[in-house]
Image 1 (cartoon, helix red, strand yellow):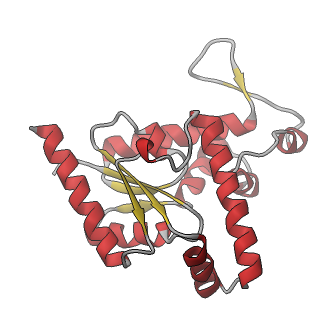
Image 2 (cartoon, rainbow, N blue to C red):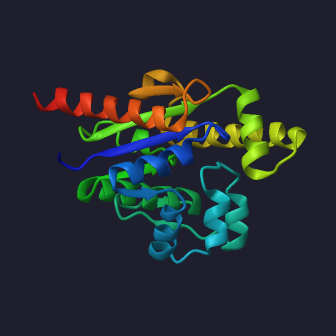
Length: 210
């Protein structure tokens, strides 16, 4: 099989990252989540803490302007155009994601990868969701967060991801028409979800090659 990319967008607490890690092991391919932050740090020279603060979270750029004296970067892709630090990070990260898709098979978690690779024939875009009750239970059990804080945390994280995705893509985060497959992680175990995703990916790629 030629190189392929599985992008996994996910509601907070739905298990999307763990599913991605398991898929990567099954398929023996690279897994990119926080690893993308390391690459952006290397390419921009920005402090890791600032990039982590920005990661999948659309926030007021004044935070970055203050930290960097309102510095802007010149875009290498357009004449006489400058981008804010936030936009520059997204631009670099998008290029990294496209480069990964060109050279290897991989699992990529979040970061608008489904949109960035939307028209790529070798990508399969998945959205993992679940009920609030299931997600609160998972956050409580896996991260040790109490029930009350878990509910508040998941609502905040979902809001951050929704706003981030909407700002940079114009699309509705989680809208099923923007993905090849959406799965409720409360209905299947991780092994079953991985099997379903692999089946769907193989089906899509086979149909494209006909």
